[in-house]
Length: 433
Image (cartoon, rainbow, N blue to C red; front, side):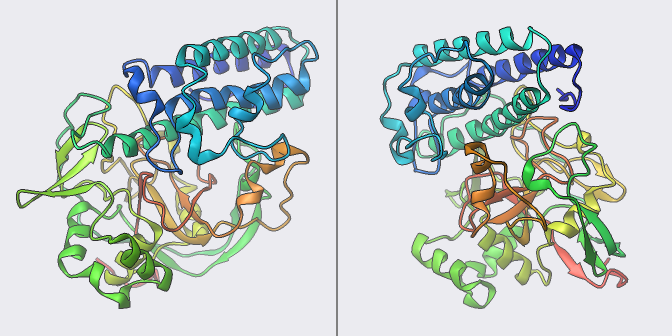
């Protein structure tokens, strides 16, 4: 699914967006259609949300920021939903507390699906009307990419929730395919210089935090030709990586001590062997698959142990800009929902998809950035503090969602996302082979 340009003003563009709207909305429900109703209310930690809440919240977004703003005839499905399914938009009203979303046994799942039908009908009726303002079409496409973000969260949140069950239930009953041996680790050099960073405006879609496009100076650098593997991360563990304070940032070492981390989030030591919980259930740890579900602290400590560092987000984007995001390992629910090595593009494997790659860059505004006015401006701007940028997408990211300029962001201790790392080094001219 590829979005249409939100700059097209013709009625045909609105019809195309209406078709795209239907595709994205159906996909959210397809991700859930094989699951029992018991799975829809799980919330094992405050950072995750129940599937039922996700399904309702993405409808709330269209109701709040499209229908209520652009359709005077629209009548809300239930006025109480404005508070129940508001995530963090304080400009709209006081949201229901995030840690308590699992307590919302009512409305029922059937009611949530009825809410979706109500919103879908109103949206399709409006989009089919033609003669729509560009601002409405632009906001609709933003809502669709917002829903795609939640499609990824639906999988990552459910994975965390299912992992808390000692039965290790699978989201999808299918064996993981065997992966070929990982490519030998080597480094690809980049000359750097004065480069353009950020969305150009020619993309079919981009979020506000990818703007404005600006110039940035890069010293010569080198990126690893692939992501760090489970086997390499296991070597870090066996070398006492989690017990060596010299490898860790101060806050990272405090997290290791407080949380008693000794391995990545979903690794399990059973009968002397290593296993990994996946969306396909508990599986033997595959040494050649990318290491996943690492915090920023773990990624940084590993990089230091390996004699490298994490790339900056500008280095990553500069390297990715000449490579196609269409070639990545993204979420096709009928296929493997666990990171693989990805495909090769100009000497680099898996630049897109597989696992999100931590960068050394804090999530801050680009020069000249201004959030949109009103509550919609809370989407990205107010989170530009105390978080780190990740790039590239993952095996849980919907296809057609990411691009070279896409900026994801999480707090440094977060581990429940498909987050891994690619090593970087200085001095691109040195032979690192």
